[in-house]
Image (cartoon, rainbow, N blue to C red; front, side, top):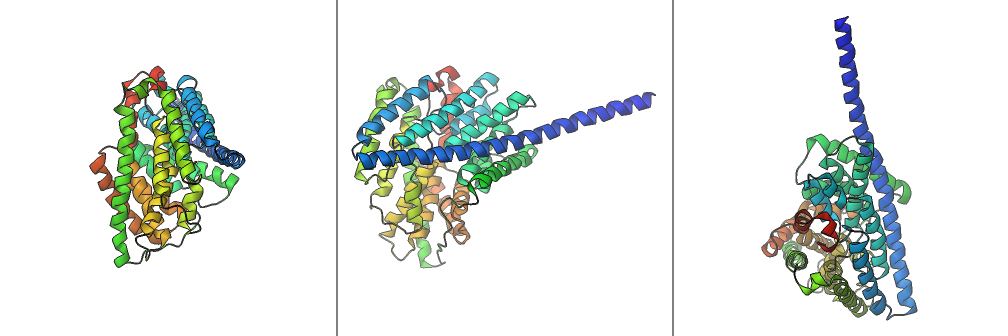
Length: 438
């Protein structure tokens, strides 16, 4: 009898372990499907907001000089007073949440309220012409969804939840599952966690399937056949790497300065007027560029990659300035997509000097180099660009450009921009987060 009882207790213990294990897997699957659906919603809202802004410009070309400053001011106000911790790209909040041990502080950074505010204010900012992207915000939204599901089911909490949600957000936003996984490892966790790696991949797969089911199988920038034959043309690779690294490092350094170096300045005491001044600067950049420096920059970058349109020579510089002005205000929005547009513009400008090199190849090199210079994640950068274009012939040159850009960028700014921006969230009470870091 005692043996039978011990056997039954052993079976019960095994069943509990199995139940918890399958609950964990089901949690990641449900979360991935949800993140994928919300990522598609954010993509649709972003496209509609930009279409609405273009329609307003068509009706009145000078509208951005009123709409953009007012929209920036309203977005900055709401992100501080109504939706705290929703400002900026959202990736620093996820990084900080992974490091916090206090549950209240952690979930304040990845709450559903902050996620809802992210979606609403991102849409508002794009409707007002901000030069921002939706991919970074999708990371915070994805992490918030996974955190909320884990909290509601009360199965467990572990940092892998946030990594899985963030990785699924990147994967669904760009339709780049490999880049989502690499970004989770390289930037968010900075390590490969064997215990959760399979669950993270499962979450990314679920998000990707949801995106595919709704939007179909698509390539973000369309498939390209750009090549860079081994030989003299390869001299452009280090040039792109250095130029992109310098420009990206400069963006990194200036943004960090406004977040961490001006805490007691007029800017920090008057965030709303400052946001409106920056909005006026973005309107001026857009007007000077012929209205192409506004928004995510997706259409312009795609045109450069495929050589379908000749943009003004100053496009890259104006997009750089518009994105910088949009980012230092702290309004909700990321700089992944605009960085790709700036990098494509850099490639187009280098094409004026190196016309023997295909513009498509230069655009891809510029995108990888500049994105690496900004975020200092070389592996993610070349993986994401190669997935965005399905151009496998350019992988080796892209790798080289990414490594050179990373080394160059660190001469200007030594630390990853996202981890630097995460520090204020770790150093201040979360109720003050609304007026704190970007």
